Amino acid sequence: MAQALLEALNLEVHYGGISAVKGISFVVEQGEMVCLIGANGAGKTSTLKALARMLPCRGEIHYGAERIDALPSHALISRGLALVPEGRGVFARLSVAENLAMGAYHRTSDRAGTADIGKDMDRIYGLLPRLAERREQLAGTLSGGEQQMLAIGRALMGRPKLLLLDEPSMGLAPIVVQKVFEVIRSVAADGVTILLVEQNARLALETCARGYVMESGKITLADSAAALLADPRVRAAYLGE
Ligand SMILES: Nc1ncnc2c1ncn2[C@@H]1O[C@H](COP(=O)(O)OP(=O)(O)OP(=O)(O)O)[C@@H](O)[C@H]1O
Ligand SMILES: [Mg+2]
Image (cartoon, rainbow, N blue to C red):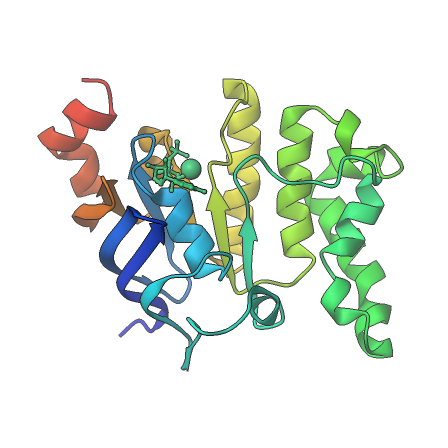
C-alpha cells in the first residue's frame, strides 16, 4: 500500500472577499507523479502557494507524518518541500551558480551541509549541462528554457522529497518544453515525488500517472491519467477535441 506524502483536506484560499480555492481535498503518494490541470484562473497557483505556505489558507495540509498548514514557508524547505513558481522566479542579477547556491541556503548554517553544496551543484550541472556551460552567466540573460532549467535546478539544490512545479511549459517553444519535461521525468525517476500544475493538459497527463481537474476553485475530476485522457469531458474542455 502506497503511503501519502502530501494530503490536502478541505483546502481553501481566499483573497479578501474572493474565494479562489473552495475546499479541495487530494493526495499525492510517496514517489508518485501527479498533475493538477485546469483553465486560467481555476485556482492552481493558489493551491500550490498554499501548499508551500506562501498564502494563508483554511483546511488541513499533511506532509509525511506532520501537519504543516500552520508552518512558515521557510520551515518547509528544510523538510524537503520545494516550489518552482510560475514565471520561474530566478534572481536575474545573480549568476547561474549564485542562483543554485541560493537553493541550498538553508544548509549553509552547518559545515557538513556547506561541504555538500559543491557536490550537489556538480550533480545538477550533470543533469542540466546547459547550465554548466553558463555557470557565470547572469540568470536574467538566460533564455526562457534555460531559466526554467535553472529554477528546477535551484529547487533540487534543497534536496526535495516533494517538488511542486507550476506551469514549467509556460512560454516555451515545443522543443524546449520536451527538454524541460525530460528533466522533470529524470528527477521523478530519481525518486522525487512531483505535483505538476499545467495548462498543457495533454502533456501533463502523458507525463503523470494520475491527475486532478480543477474548475473554478473546485476539483471536478480525479482519476488515472489514462482515464482522464480518454474522458470525453476532459477531451472537450482541455484537449481541444
Ligand atoms: N493576489 C490576488 N488577489 C486577488 N485575486 C487573486 C490573486 N491571485 C489570484 N487571484 C484570483 O484567484 C483565482 C485563481 O487564480 P490562480 O492564479 O490560482 O489560478 P491558476 O489556475 O493558477 O490560473 P493560470 O492558469 O492563469 O495560472 C483567479 O480568479 C485570480 O484572479
Ligand atoms: Mg497559475
